[in-house]
Image (cartoon, rainbow, N blue to C red; front, side, top):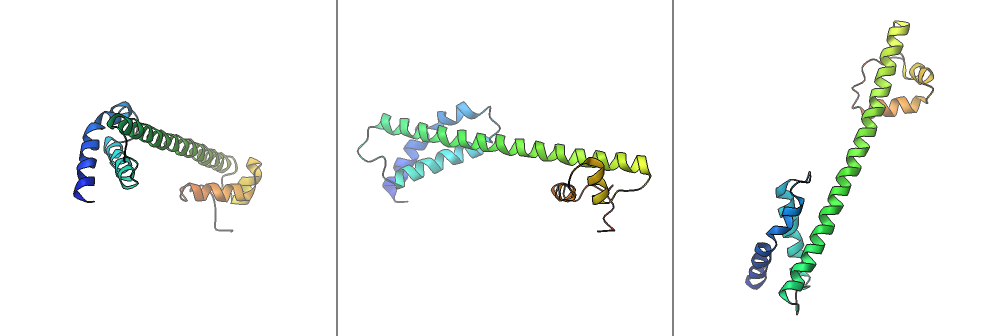
Length: 144
């Protein structure tokens, strides 16, 4: 970055500190907010989007870009949390069924037996075990 762009960056970075304040209560670490702000400013300067614009217009555009990017990050985090919760529920369901089977029949079920017991496919069981990181220990895989 040349000296002129570096000076512009430093000025804009200083003038946009308040952008992160609105998102401090989010689950995004403050360091990440500052990093995103810096990246947006760098992209903005490198694309010469600031050329010929008034200072306030530049700040408004940067604020819009920052808000959009951080909002997208928050939505992505929410989506990943929803997926994680669904996986955990599925793993718990299979694990609980394997425990019930073992208590009822006094043996560990094979994936096929557990699938029949639960009314699901064997692939459902195998996929769930894989999702769990192979932590479901009450299933007998010796016959597969």
